[in-house]
Length: 132
Image 1 (tube, rainbow, N blue to C red):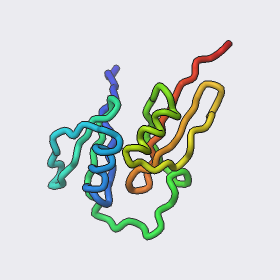
Image 2 (spheres, helix red, strand yellow):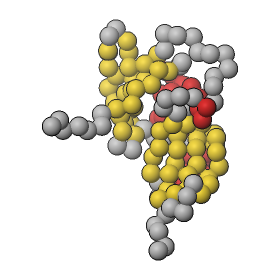
Image 3 (cartoon, one colour):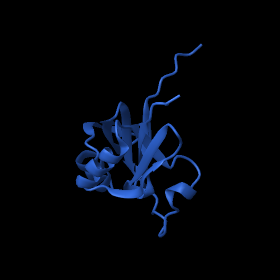
C-alpha cells in the first residue's frame, strides 16, 4: 500500500504579482523559492501547513468569470481558525474583501469567505465544540 500524503495546491494565475500580494500581504503566507517547471516560473508559498503554487496562465481569462460557488472543480481553499469573526475582521484589516460574512454553517461550524485573486475564495472555518 502507498503512503499517501498531501503535497500542494497548484493555481493558474492571471497575474502573479496580484496573487503574490494577496497571499503575502493579506494572508501572511511565507514565500518559498520559486520553481521552474516545464519552462514556466512557479511561485511557491506556505500557508497554514499547505503549499500553494502559482503559474501564470497562458490562456486569456474569461471576460466575466463564473462566480466561484457556481463553477465545477475546486472553488475555495479553507483554513481552520480559532474565531471566525475575529479572523475575518483581522484579514479585512489587512486588505481582504469579504465574499460571505461569518455565518453558522452548522451547529459545529462557523465560517466566512474572503475574495481571493482570479475568482477563488478563502474560507475561514471555526469548529465550535459540541454542547451535547
